[in-house]
Length: 90
Image 1 (cartoon, rainbow, N blue to C red):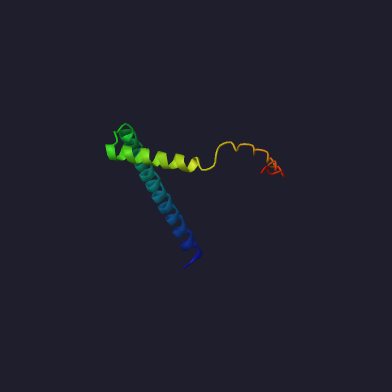
Image 2 (cartoon, one colour):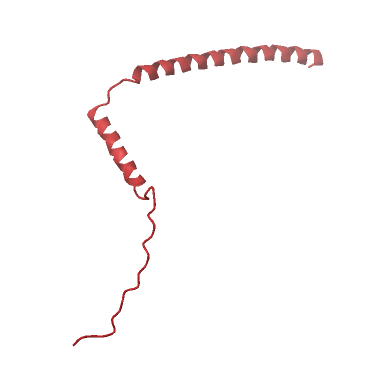
Protein backbone atom coordinates (compact mmCIF):
# COMPACT_ATOMS: atom_id res chain seq x y z
CA UNK A 1 0.00 0.00 0.00
CA UNK A 2 1.27 3.42 -0.90
CA UNK A 3 1.23 6.39 1.45
CA UNK A 4 -1.32 8.15 -0.77
CA UNK A 5 -3.60 5.08 -0.58
CA UNK A 6 -3.21 4.99 3.21
CA UNK A 7 -4.18 8.65 3.49
CA UNK A 8 -7.26 8.08 1.31
CA UNK A 9 -8.23 5.05 3.44
CA UNK A 10 -7.84 7.10 6.62
CA UNK A 11 -10.09 9.86 5.24
CA UNK A 12 -12.70 7.27 4.30
CA UNK A 13 -12.49 5.54 7.70
CA UNK A 14 -12.71 8.87 9.54
CA UNK A 15 -15.91 9.64 7.64
CA UNK A 16 -17.32 6.24 8.52
CA UNK A 17 -16.41 6.68 12.20
CA UNK A 18 -18.13 10.08 12.25
CA UNK A 19 -21.24 8.55 10.66
CA UNK A 20 -21.34 5.71 13.22
CA UNK A 21 -20.76 8.15 16.07
CA UNK A 22 -23.74 10.23 14.94
CA UNK A 23 -25.92 7.13 14.72
CA UNK A 24 -24.91 5.98 18.22
CA UNK A 25 -25.44 9.42 19.77
CA UNK A 26 -28.87 9.69 18.13
CA UNK A 27 -29.85 6.21 19.30
CA UNK A 28 -28.73 7.03 22.87
CA UNK A 29 -30.80 10.22 22.77
CA UNK A 30 -33.83 8.21 21.63
CA UNK A 31 -33.30 5.69 24.44
CA UNK A 32 -32.95 8.46 27.03
CA UNK A 33 -36.17 10.05 25.79
CA UNK A 34 -37.93 6.68 26.11
CA UNK A 35 -36.57 6.22 29.65
CA UNK A 36 -37.71 9.72 30.60
CA UNK A 37 -41.19 9.06 29.19
CA UNK A 38 -41.46 5.73 31.02
CA UNK A 39 -40.20 7.27 34.27
CA UNK A 40 -42.83 10.01 34.02
CA UNK A 41 -45.56 7.47 33.27
CA UNK A 42 -44.62 5.30 36.26
CA UNK A 43 -44.23 8.18 38.73
CA UNK A 44 -47.85 8.01 39.91
CA UNK A 45 -48.43 4.26 39.70
CA UNK A 46 -50.03 2.89 42.87
CA UNK A 47 -48.15 0.13 44.64
CA UNK A 48 -49.89 -3.13 45.42
CA UNK A 49 -50.60 -3.91 49.08
CA UNK A 50 -47.76 -6.44 49.02
CA UNK A 51 -45.31 -3.88 47.60
CA UNK A 52 -46.40 -1.26 50.14
CA UNK A 53 -45.92 -3.78 52.95
CA UNK A 54 -42.45 -4.61 51.63
CA UNK A 55 -41.54 -0.91 51.73
CA UNK A 56 -42.89 -0.62 55.28
CA UNK A 57 -40.94 -3.72 56.36
CA UNK A 58 -37.78 -2.30 54.82
CA UNK A 59 -38.31 1.02 56.60
CA UNK A 60 -38.72 -0.83 59.90
CA UNK A 61 -35.55 -2.85 59.33
CA UNK A 62 -33.56 0.25 58.40
CA UNK A 63 -34.81 2.10 61.49
CA UNK A 64 -33.85 -0.87 63.68
CA UNK A 65 -30.33 -0.75 62.25
CA UNK A 66 -30.20 3.02 62.71
CA UNK A 67 -31.27 2.63 66.35
CA UNK A 68 -28.40 0.27 67.21
CA UNK A 69 -26.18 3.26 67.88
CA UNK A 70 -27.96 6.23 69.46
CA UNK A 71 -27.73 9.60 67.77
CA UNK A 72 -26.33 11.09 70.96
CA UNK A 73 -24.28 8.97 73.31
CA UNK A 74 -25.22 9.82 76.90
CA UNK A 75 -22.57 10.96 79.33
CA UNK A 76 -21.43 8.10 81.53
CA UNK A 77 -22.69 8.21 85.11
CA UNK A 78 -19.98 8.71 87.71
CA UNK A 79 -18.91 5.57 89.48
CA UNK A 80 -19.71 5.72 93.17
CA UNK A 81 -17.87 3.38 95.51
CA UNK A 82 -20.34 1.56 97.73
CA UNK A 83 -20.11 2.45 101.37
CA UNK A 84 -19.09 -0.59 103.33
CA UNK A 85 -20.03 -0.53 107.00
CA UNK A 86 -17.47 -2.65 108.81
CA UNK A 87 -19.72 -2.99 111.86
CA UNK A 88 -22.08 -5.90 111.83
CA UNK A 89 -24.88 -5.82 114.35
CA UNK A 90 -25.56 -9.03 115.94
